[in-house]
Length: 317
Image 1: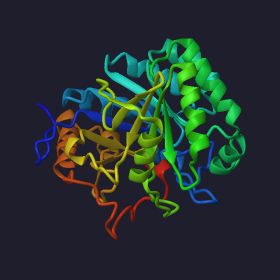
Image 2 (image 1 turned 30 degrees about the vertical axis):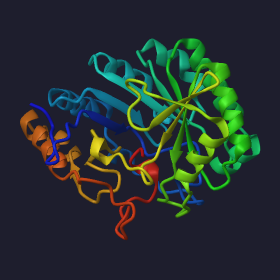
Image 3 (image 1 turned 135 degrees about the horizontal axis):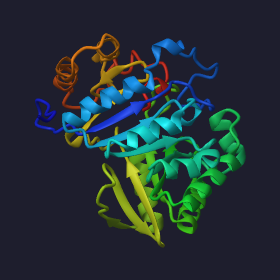
């Protein structure tokens, strides 16, 4: 039995937010004063997440990404990942990298093979401003420790902001080439700060300047990838060049809601079912309900956009 929506898309990818807490306050993710975190008892327990994962696997979910907030701030995350690895499913983790140096060896030992690191600049001052106080050195050191531990690929997710410039691009290309990483430029979603960037123009200028070679890389998902001087650089454009027709994912929020789309207001509460020991069949029906609600495309351009999203950490964007 598989999850297939009304537009014929097979849903086989689940993104799981294990916490809404984060040790950074990035300008495009959270308001300046931060947010009030959810009470601990509202957050799914690890055993509840694993129960949901088991049901999801039985429905054809083949790939899982662990997100937050910042997943490495949650106590017990390594043991949870160890138990997840026993499910024999393709899973990976997205982190801001601040704690990566402390966890790199343990993550490799429990079966983490791939990591995405959110990193928007290699300029120390700009990094501190974007993250509201983060220390760049902790992130770069963590990336290098993860690489040394044997985690591969490591993808650097860089949100293109209004002040992303040629120097940023040049520094990133050098960094990923030297360390065998993958760079991915991500189009900014104006959920918190309402600032828009011309991502299409950014990509076009990049191609004119660097003359990269378009390449297809199996398993790298959505986006366009280029080779440039030995470096791999991707562009992920959810707004200017939507890839909704290929969307194969659901999201599980840290408080137990299934979302069929990042911009959707339709949520399915799966936590109640798990905490009340509903049968697997009843939990499966909640997955089918979420998939039934999956829209044909996102609605970020609509006035109703993200009315229920105060910050990206709530859903692990």
